[in-house]
Structure formats: C-alpha cells, structure tokens
Image (cartoon, helix red, strand yellow):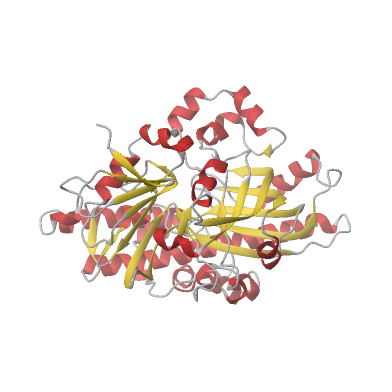
Length: 473
C-alpha cells in the first residue's frame, strides 16, 4: 500500500504519521525525482525506521534514497540512546576518497591505449571483485592494530605519508575500537583485504576535472580545471559485512521479547547504548570504520606507486595527494539542536559548513569537501555543505541512487544502450559482469544534487568526468 506524504516546503516532503511512528519522517526530492520513490519500498522503510524509540525528530531521506537493508539507503537518524546496526549498514564506513595529481589532461597523453594500460596496471596492484584479496598479507600489517589505529598503523609501518592522514575524516581513525568485539569469522574473512576494492557499486575511477564552480573552495582543495584525479569508493569489506550480520542477529535475539520497541523488524533490530550488546557493537563498529579508512589508504599507496612507475618511464614526475576521505555509512556522536546524539548515516555523507570546529584546520574556511559519485559514464561532483545543512544534521546525499534493482538492470539494459551511455569511458570488465551497474540503473546525478542545492543546503565546487573506471564483478 502506498505511503501518503505531504509537501512541506521546496523539495521537502513529510510522510503521513502512523500510530506506530514515534517521530516524523521527512525526505528530499524535486519534481523529477519524486515519482521514482514509488518504485520500491524506500518510503515504507523510512516510516518503519521512525518507529524506533529515542530518536530526534525527524528521520531523514536524502534525494538519492532507495530501498536498502532496514533503513533505506540515503537514510539518517539522530539517536539519543540507541544504536542500530542496520541504520549504519552492511558495509561499515563505505566511503569515498579523492586523490589529486599534478597531471593535466591532454588527449594525446591520455589516449585510449594509455588509459587501458593504466587501468590494467592498477587492477594488477589492487585486487577487485567479490571476495577479492591479496594472496599474502602485506608485510608488517597487524590486523588488530588496523582495527584500533586505522590508517595511522599503515603510515607507522611505512605505507603512505603522514600528510595523507591530515585530509581524512577523523585523520583516519576513531577511538573506542576493540578487536575483541569483532568475531573471529569477520577477521578471518577480512585478513587479506586491506587495500582491495570489492564489488557492487564500489569503483576506482580516473577522472578529468571538467568544471570549477567555486574558485575559492577549489583552490583550497588543490583542484583546477583539466586536472587528473582519482576517486576511490570502497569500505570495510568482509569485516564490516560480517559485523553487521552478527550484530543485527544479536540485537534481535536480545531484545525481541525484553524490549520489543527496539525491533520493528529484524533488519532494524537495535540496542540501547548502555546495554552489553550495544556497547560491544559500538566498539566493533569503530574497528570496522578504522579498517575501511586503512583500506582506502592502502589503495592510495598502490595507486600512487603505480602512477609514479608508469609515468617515470615517460620522463614525467607524478605527485599524488589526498584531497579528502569521507565516510557515508557510520554512526558518530555529534551535537545537534542542543543535544548530543549518535548520528547514523546510511548512504549519506557528513558535510560540515565553513567555521565548524570539526573541520580539518586547512578546510575551516570552506567546510570540508563532500563527494557525490555519479554512475559509470556520468560525472561526479565535489560539494560543500552550508549552515542551512543543520536541518539535515549536516548531511548530504552520497551518490546518484539506484532506480533499478540489480536483477532488473541485468534483465532490461541492453549492451547497446550501455555502450551508448558509456561513450568514450574506458572500463575494465565485460558488459555481462557489470550490467547491474549500468548508468541507466541510477538516477540523474544532476537532479539529485540540484535538489539540495536549490534550497541552499549544498554548494557545488567542481565537476569530475570519468576517463576510465575499474569495477569488481
């Protein structure tokens, strides 16, 4: 049965409140995106999420919202005294890192042959795909140290530079992680996955910066037109996936009878923060967040070395630097509306405005960058949040958002349509392996970005167009 809703302002809608909902549920869409929300269960999932106790009102859905696990992807809650593993997501600290280089686009320098050579070398250096891992673990890496210290452990043992950590959310690690709270099965699955891509919507993309919208912010971020950049979209791999499964099952078992208010359904099973299972999950989640920062850091190390080696043979010295690294599946303590709350962002990116004290010092005057990947074959964007984003708990969307399930995409999108959408973009897998990630399976990223931009919550900084993309199957 369709969920009724009412328009409450420009690009803002509120679900009709049911007796089971404890708080309001608000979502963002423009006229071109609104009809897409009737194609899946995202609105129903948002309403069910609003049934959880101990939340600030409202729960939120971003313009890229689509059906997910428990809460829709693009869902946000501000919890006063509960933790929900499903509202963090399966891939804990799935996130995006953008790297800038000192190379500028030249069609003669970056022809198809060169791009194919580069992505072939990158794919040799970085395992991709479902279950992708290294044959042996990198020398000196201690998994428990990664869980507690994140990317900093890798820098300590010689992988990467200390400067890489400065432009990383939380400088690449958060506190409170405890390896003992992560199951042995999760550790065993992830032991050789530090520095790997994964499958699904994860990608590595060589990009050309094609347009600057905000010259001041772009200059602060070290970005300029025709610059060659590299975007990394990956997360905590099997460690986060297994931890989410373990925790949802534990929450459900512990609370379905004793605290039924915490279990609107199995996927949304939650725990009180001061309960044994709540405390354990927070420590395990922190460890998975740190693992994901380390994962993207090690991918950075591999890309940097690959590019240096490749271009050195052509007499070109390459420099690769981190612009920023930001999570979009996490739960973090923040202060909003005068209260300390645990902000769960599932498929949503934190976007702090200029002057916010939690920004990196170098980005205090602009706000830190937020990255909005498009789909394969379409542009990605660098944004900043504004003070108006306080209504979204300083959050923005994390991508374009799906319009088709993976099964539907594989059944309906033809190879011809896929190739037409991809245009001149080089890709690493045959069509059959990545049909579910075709551009037609996603919303128009420009419409998604415009939705928040029109109401003053975000500002565009730069546009990045794909040259070559690496996907896992």
